[in-house]
Image 1 (cartoon, rainbow, N blue to C red):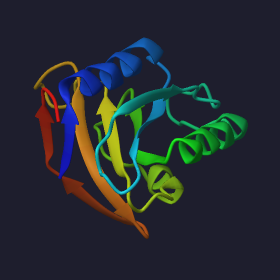
Image 2 (spheres, one colour):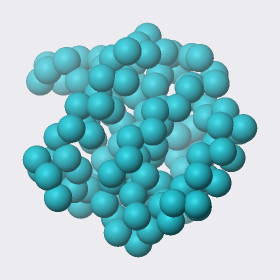
Image 3 (cartoon, rainbow, N blue to C red):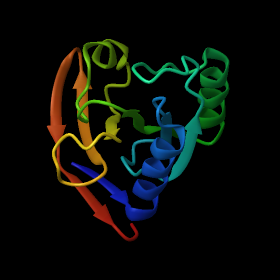
Image 4 (cartoon, helix red, strand yellow):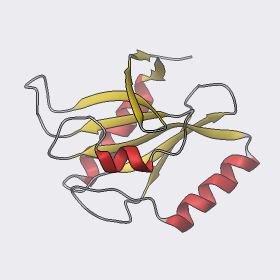
Length: 140
């Protein structure tokens, strides 16, 4: 289960809406071994595409060095889908290389008539996708 604050959910959704129609992407870092997302880090989609996202390799290297210096790890890796439901594509699955992370997808397309976005979380380990419950809290 992913436990995440409402403030972080709001920031992730706002980033997805801001970058629409391109996919948005980013990370929420947290203390090592805590499974607690704390620090919101929006990233640039280097692909600048409505159907694909890619972290800039230089930005990603800088981020990992910074997290290492702060004793953090990527607790959430997020991106948006602009025209499809919030479910990992084959490309998303192939790029998932953080087995301990929660992979959050936000869809800015109303694919289910339940509102103007979907917010879903997955574990992706060795190509295996498992959806998990999302528990939104006011604070930890």
